[in-house]
Image (cartoon, rainbow, N blue to C red):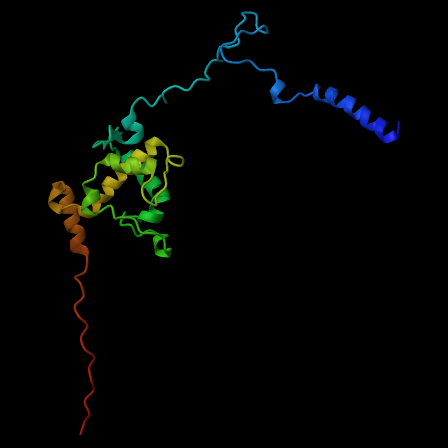
Length: 212
């Protein structure tokens, strides 16, 4: 028998042995759910969880809190009071995540809009002034049009804080002086009185007359 034939014969004998030495995922040591185990003394494969490893308080049983919807309709109220702290947090998060498109006052003229990005609707148009507050939360959660979802970047509480701040922005651009408390009306009137009157049209330049 030639040397090549001998080498081929040896190789054919070794291949089955090599195949029997596989230690990959198909032959790994594992336990299927709810199967018995001979490794543990009580014979159960499922083990008790270590203490303090199960998340509490994030069951998401309140769908309106996490979606902004009740059924298919946006909710009309915030899930917590719109305190000063909530509005300040909403302002800070709005400026960070929303103002590049929506502008600092929510008029839809943000920085990247001036660079060619599609302009979003102004929060001060009648349609959005009348929209339920849950609408804004739901748009931030699921996205709308060219706006992507911000659920991954902005936590639930911050999304509600931003929605509350949008309401404050809408009011700031559409409030009437008569709706403010008397003390605030006086303060606003005093500030307006300090402003100089608008300048009139410029007078035409004088033309020197030619003397005889």
